[in-house]
Image (cartoon, rainbow, N blue to C red; front, side, top):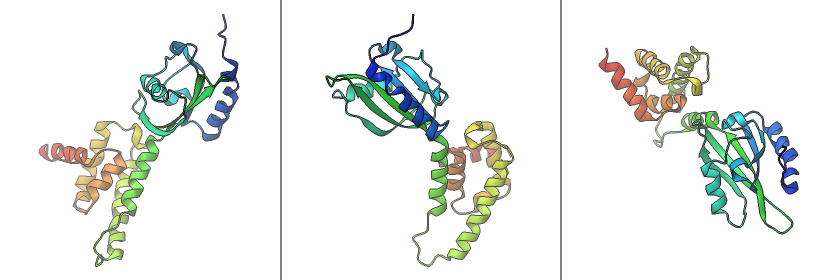
Length: 213
């Protein structure tokens, strides 16, 4: 038997599809009908972002957001992590009926995992020294060498950083260490951002590599 969906909720399904189509595969849009929270999803687009489908129960973090907004006030631009470990930027917009009762919501979950990595790399690239006597020409030359060496080493794997496992990242750090990259000031921080890990992780990789030599 087909499920009956609240008409107020139904009218948002085509809007959800339009948002997903506009912002592409990294943008999941979900329409919920609160009549049955165990089966609240009545439409989902780009469900691969969180690994959900029409039969997936509402996640705890969504339930928490609903409880936090008892009056049905929309919640914009909050961050969370999917069960797949992806970094999400999310918005929850509530659907109300003619009596101003909350009957459902539209949730937008944008996977910004790779963009966060790019942001960190750009922040590192645009960071400047406080010392007024710094020779900017020499700094730029060093940065160019560092960037090229790191990028060339990463490119050998032929896949985005997000898809590389720990062993592959260790291999990249080993190759860079052999090339003397970590003798360059700021290299640890730059490589950490490029590999989407912490600087302490890079130090741990280096300790393990150098102990094995």
